[in-house]
Structures are given as structure tokens and as C-alpha cells.
Length: 229
Image (cartoon, rainbow, N blue to C red; front, side):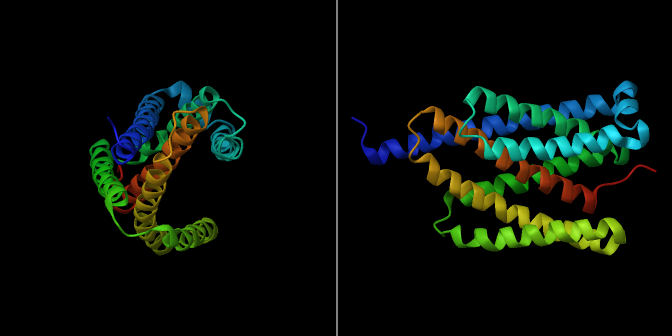
């Protein structure tokens, strides 16, 4: 007979497994699309035609899709929510094609591996730590706002020093957010009853961890990636 104390870890494990599998699927899709698009003259010519307008439309479309998915998750079916998540992964992959144009492939792979190890370490910490990270969420959010604002300002200043500092702070910030998000998802997972609502929570959780990993990777690549000559 399974007791409640035994059932909770099993329920948590099932929920978090679903989160990580969805996240990894999205990462594989983004990586595959980015690599394919970077080697397709047809796609590149389209994205950067008309002074790059299609590329900027793609970026705006990604932001809109994430906002809509997060805001309307309770109104969508789990199937539609997952489809939107995978569509976002494809769109992200298209926008990431520039990575293969700017950086050495070996450098991309190295930074991806390093980022994966950092992400895994902090996710394990968030899942296992006895410390309550809830209060840290407020400060992490404030830090995120600060980095976004600094990034927007630097679009006009174009300071390499500011870019380096925000990238360095960004790595630390998203490492912290990874632990915070993991712990929050672990607490949600305890109550998973296999319903449609928790299926959708799992998808949103996968999206959040996907974004955490992507941001760690991009910041690490910006700091330590070897650019092509």
C-alpha cells in the first residue's frame, strides 16, 4: 500500500520529468532549426531581406507568442498550449541562426555544454535545497528588470563594457532564477493530480526553464564565445 509520503515524491518525479522532457524537446527543435536555417540561403535571404524587416518581425512575434501563451494558458487546451510552445521553439531557432553566422561551431558546442552543466547544477540545487527561495524571487525579478533596461539603453550607447557587465550579471541572475523556478515547480508538482490544468502547468514550467537555459547560454556565448574572423 502506497502512503501519502511515498506518493508525493512519485507525483513530483512524474510532473518534473514531464517538464524536463518538454524543455529538452524544445531545445532540440531550436538547435536543429538554427543549424538548418544558418545553412539555408533561401531562409537567410528571406530573413534579412528588406533591411532585415522579416527578422525583426520574427523577434516581435516570439515576444507576442510568449505573452499570449502565458496569459491565456488557462483558456487553451494542453494540446494547443504544447503546439504554441513548440512553435515558439521553432521561431527561436530561426532567430538563433545568426549564432552560427557569428561564432565558431566548436565554441557554440562548448558554451552549450558548459551552460547545460551550470543549468543542471542549479536546477538540482533548487530541487534539493532546504532553503526557501521564495523571497529571492522578488530580488531576481528586480535584477531582471535592471538588466533589460540596461540592455535597451546600450542599444543606443553601444558600449562593449556595458554589454560585458550585463552579460556577466545576466549569467548569475539566470542561474539564480533557474534554482528559484525549479523549487517553485517542485512545490506545484506535489499537488499534481494528472488533470488538464497540471498538464498545462507542466508546459509553462518547461517554457520557463527553457528560457532560463537559453538566457544562460546566450550570455555565456557573448562572454566567452569565439567569434568568426
